[in-house]
Length: 261
Ligand SMILES: NC(=O)c1ccc[n+]([C@@H]2O[C@H](COP(=O)([O-])OP(=O)(O)OC[C@H]3O[C@@H](n4cnc5c(N)ncnc54)[C@H](O)[C@@H]3O)[C@@H](O)[C@H]2O)c1
Image 1 (cartoon, rainbow, N blue to C red):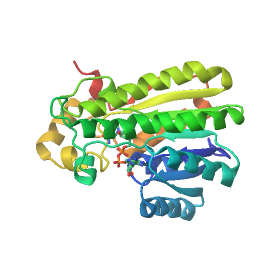
Image 2 (tube, rainbow, N blue to C red):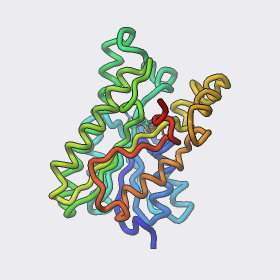
Image 3 (cartoon, helix red, strand yellow):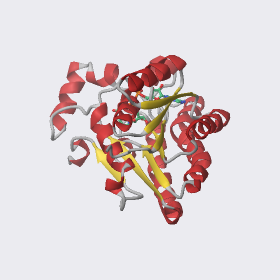
């Protein structure tokens, strides 16, 4: 029997990258997985992949920063499967958003007010909305699990992406508060803080550039960039009963890069 047998999970930003890897792993562990992302094509492709492997999946297209989309998405999941057990707030925008959405990952002086608001709306606002409307659903089931994705940027300073950094610090703080407030209702809430993970979010800007990749790998004690699967395995642990006495924590998954002096 899988570690998440029969559980109903919703993963945001699961059309690609870490969210997609987690959706596949959750389904392989027996969960029924609602796949959320912005566009129908990536969501449908993820659902098809999971189903082809024998898993159960549901397509839920929507923008995590849009309250109506969030409420509709949750209604679709509960309407289809009757409830929600695991809420994994993984969606976010980072370096690749400059090319994809025209949102720059700059330092605070260069950051436009418009970019600041957009990054906050998605990376922190999306977690707010899904927790606001999702927690009552978890309580209805007698408890559940929340996993929120932050970053090592929440814990260490970087020279750019200041709005991104602020959102991830907010995710860590909010998750801790949720854990304290809703622990008595049977809800565990933890944050994953990924390090340098080779997904489309950073690939072109960091990994594909020889000079930058060499420095990153050299500074990482485990001497490689992370993979989406490195994160997905930790997410399975946090979603499962194996982590039943862990809540309010930040789990750093970064090959040790943030431990360097
Ligand atoms: N890749 C890294 O090195 C790294 C490091 C630390 C933290 N993270 C965080 O990990 C999470 C997953 O990122 P990834 O590496 O898989 O990147 P990714 O860009 O491959 O995946 C992010 C997914 O989120 C989706 N998304 C973006 N905005 C959305 C919105 N408004 N509504 C719904 N979906 C939306 C995208 O379409 C995409 O499929 C993010 O929160 C990111 O900030 C990534």
